[in-house]
Image 1 (cartoon, rainbow, N blue to C red):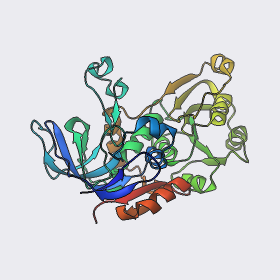
Image 2 (cartoon, rainbow, N blue to C red):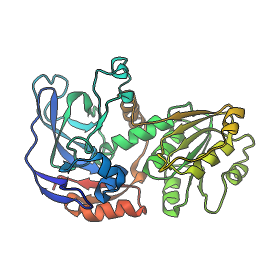
Image 3 (cartoon, one colour):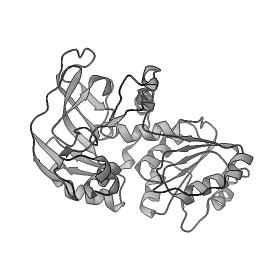
Amino acid sequence: MRALLKAKAGPGLELTEVPDPEPGPGEVLVRVMRTGICGTDLHIDAWDDWAARTVQPPLVLGHEFCGTVEAIGAGVTKTAVGEFVSGEGHLVCGTCRNCLAGRRHLCANTIGLGVQRQGAFAELTVLPEQNIWVHRQQVDPDVAAIFDPFGNAVHTALSFPVVGEDVLITGAGPIGLMAAAVARHAGARNVVITDISEHRLELAHKVGVDLAVNVARTTVAEAQRELGMREGFDVAMEISGQPSAVREIIANCSHGGRVAMLGLPAAEFAIDWSAVVLKMLTIKGIYGREMFETWYSMSVLLQSGLDLSPVITHRFDHTEYAEAFETARGGHCGKVILDWTR
């Protein structure tokens, strides 16, 4: 089969032939239709310090995908050949304290599809049956391919109640845009998103935000005044990984405000912990998706009319992967999709 391979340590990828995988006991073989390019894939392509520490070539990368079930291994009982599926890219051990308590998203021994295990940027991929999500209603394949990052957005956006609340989102990348769409769909009063990319802020208007703020020119405090807000934001979602964004959130949250943090900073940084204490803020770290409560919520949100189409801005054939990766890296885009059906 054809696969996008990190053949050796160093920058670059190659589209090449590799042996077809076969499903073992309890596993499902999926014929891939679409894949989404993630920031993790860009790190592996560039072979930065994180990739060099984490990845062991040769590796088929990619963890955002959808496709149809091609074959099943022994013991598979809930997934059938021909079903349209996506996959949860975090593989859990099933035996640690959190797994045994039903909190699989907190598994202490998680490994990643396309990071520590052969991934989905290929014509075929294999996952444990417990990681397969069968789509029971019609879903656009481009949307089904990004259920993984969509899950990050839903997990973040619904960590705290947003009905009737004023919501601040820092970072208007694809996950931030999806989180904004979810918050709006779920009944937030005001949804404000910040970034420094005018292109991404334009996309934010398409998903229904009230204000898209370029923080290179306007402060969050000024955005509050424009909306007639007096006491700060009730819920904030930090998705940029920027220290300045965290500081802006703390400065502009209401007393008793709640903060969901998904963005990963590149280094340690200082914040005003006195403000956190005196405002009685709640700060919650977010990682991945709750398995599979978040997946259920994603399906229901789409079924109830949530539209993610503005977030998907570019589509490429898998043979055009170099251009697709360059587009994703350039940042003048939303989500970038690779088609594996041709």
